[in-house]
Image 1 (cartoon, rainbow, N blue to C red):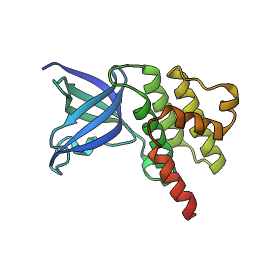
Image 2 (tube, rainbow, N blue to C red):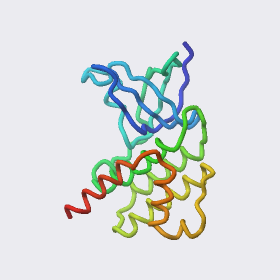
Image 3 (tube, rainbow, N blue to C red):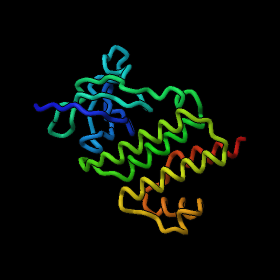
Image 4 (tube, helix red, strand yellow):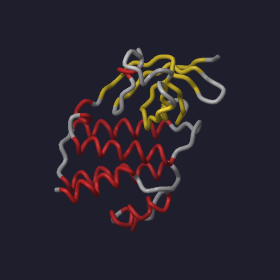
Length: 188
């Protein structure tokens, strides 16, 4: 079984059986990969404490028949300020969810990885007012869509409602972060 090392950011994790989890990870060299973490739901798992969202991970992955397997992981950079603020969590989650939904496995693009890193750094290092928060979200979406070859027209880029409609037209389902934002907005 061949192994490879790469940097990656966890996009999504899904429970698989009693103790395993399937991780969707956007990596620098391989693009999006699906990797099975055996026993990672167990408290005693050596990998468990390192498999964090909102972090750049140094990964050792073994190629597998159906799924690759996580063999080792170390946190290379942790975006701790993101993890301590609900708005920052939602803003960062928007980026992860968008990349998860609009990228395919084994189609590497280092520019997408670097965009995610810069997006996390901006969120981590700044406090945003509500209007600024929307601008950051909007800017990430436009840059990401452009990297995918789905660059919206100028009238879409300059109008948040048109951009949201544009995104909905390119997604199979509504973003969970949008649903969460709607709930938060109604309670505040």
